Amino acid sequence: MELKKQGDFGLMTQSLANWQGRKEWFFNREHTDTYEQWYEGRYKRAEVWQKKVMAQLLAKDPEVKELLEFGCGTARFTRWWHEIGIEATGADLSPFMLGQAVHLFKGGLANADSHYMPFKDNSFDTVAFITTFEYYRDPVQVIREAARVARRGIAFGMMNRNSPKVLRRRVQQLFGKNPFYVTATFYTPNLLIQKINEALKGRNYSLEWTCTGLPKWFPVQQWSVPVGDFFGLYVKFND
Ligand SMILES: C[S@@+](CC[C@H](N)C(=O)[O-])C[C@H]1O[C@@H](n2cnc3c(N)ncnc32)[C@H](O)[C@@H]1O
Image (tube, rainbow, N blue to C red; front, top):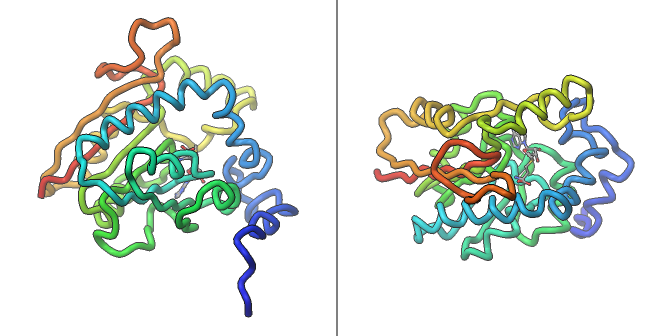
């Protein structure tokens, strides 16, 4: 049987509004189809700084050339990595998010769960997670999977628990106004480091992190204080 051309992929999801009865926002087209628009509007400034901090962290290891981004969503970051000289592949659990990604990103994509990465050991230099780790049921298992698949390190870009926006999101959620974080766990750099230390016991690695997502009027937009809406953290394997 002949496979359909890539351009037809989106048609598969056109009449399907929900994936297998799942309640999470990323299994509902009502939310996935407008995801990209957010970052073209009021979140643009946040995205610029998120990319800036991730680029800085990855620049510390110039040998990183091939990256696997898990929880890639619509490929918002996946299609950007090449701008900093990195070839990327994306993977995500949601067929709807991938249904968008396939039109926006030229590279390879896989439909898979971060807890069970269908890739061989040491397949990529780095595994990256951008605003997806918050949704993982078993963060230690995911870090172990990433450490198995990655040769050089793991990159995290996350919403920070130490941010006034977290309280705002939870209050909105209480009134049924914000479906995006119902199943999310927010971490601080320290809480994430605890999970990394548990997952990578016995390994030799170094850690670096930085925060951004500070108000526009604030004198700095990035610092090494664990406060701000977003933080980037890089784990570099030394063994
Ligand atoms: C907030 S979006 C982030 C998407 C993209 N990384 C970005 O920064 O725009 C979170 C993504 O994580 C994905 N996700 C949630 N749980 C997952 C899992 N267990 N394995 C893989 N992807 C998952 C969702 O489908 C969604 O696309």
